[in-house]
Image (tube, rainbow, N blue to C red; front, side, top):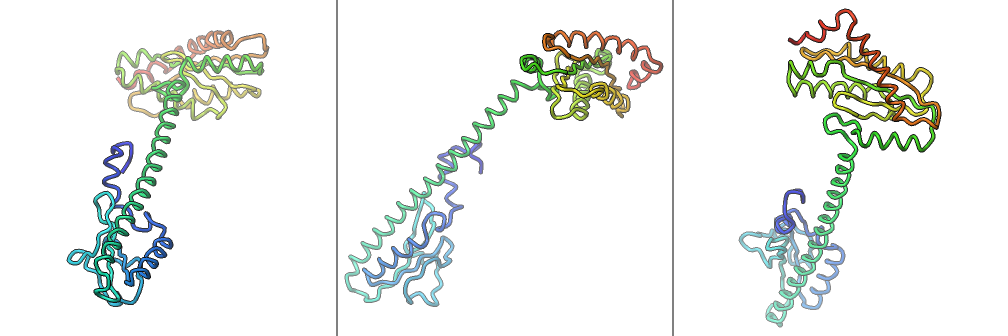
Length: 308
């Protein structure tokens, strides 16, 4: 039962059924207490769990005794109005101070119930607080994630991508490869197949970008059908190979409707005085040159229209 779906008060009332005596009491301390009580009152004591299984036996009076917790339940030990155990006594000298003995045993049962109740509430409260803390941390994590991520694709959103650009600029890291990735004819897909398929196209391309990138790549969706990728300390040819891989993956993508295709522009920031925003504009220019080549290549229109 989860604290996220069940109120604490209801949980407290119901969860006691999952507790055994060993969850509520230190068994060795409980046995020592009952042994002292038995010695003072000259009685033998049997403590069973809620089902009648023997837990603590003091004295020989209960040898061969099989508790009937339904017909002869003894003294019930109850926590949160639920029976957690049964206490049986056998007088060694019947009639000797029987009334006083019964009063003291009843008082002992009340004491054990109070101690068990306190132990139960303490344990359940701690579990509840831990659950609330985990829930709060998860909420914070999701909130932080939502502030950074593009909901549709899972890559960084435009705002956070720009924040990362500024951080890299301030760090004066060079070289930085700047990659602009634009989905070819996204509007064609939207016009002919609707919002769901055009959104799926964006997700497909984002998935390819993530799969072909290294963990240190910064990927963001910077416009509806446009992605930016930053590769700090890029090795020679690394960004170009990345661009080639994502274009090959798109061309080889098998789907009855979608025919993903992307135009890619790659430039480098090599001077700390430059800004990544400036270089992203240059990458966009290179992307448009690549787009012109792709869209005028033989077979492009036929592949794009295959789902019609």
